Amino acid sequence: MTSHQFCTPGWLKESARIYKATPDAKDQLKKLTAKICYTDFILGKINLELGTKMKIIELALPVNNIFDFLTQVDLQFPDEMSEDELTSYRSKIEVLRRERGS
Image (cartoon, rainbow, N blue to C red; front, side):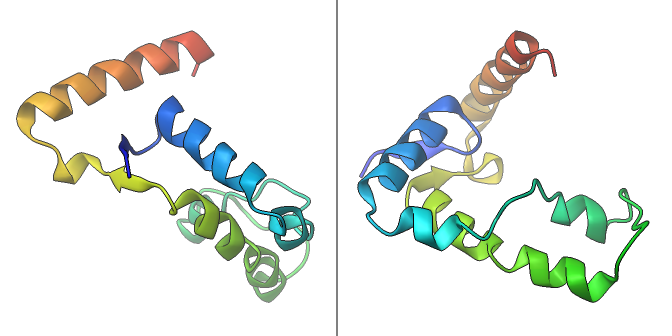
């Protein structure tokens, strides 16, 4: 299995390939109908204006299915990289951010 660096186009492309090759993928993810920034919610960066925290947690449950697809790829995270790999990774990510206007 080819290793991909986390949060790079190669990783996303491979994850999309796995998703398309998995017959029940759409059924597993059909309940997910909104963008959820769960980590930001937990950190207090997003304020809850309507509903309850318990309802938000219920909405986040389908996220496990997303993680299942995104973690079928052999990933290399920044804390696992050598200094040279990390320098190269940071450069690639900076270029990606500029290209996407982030």
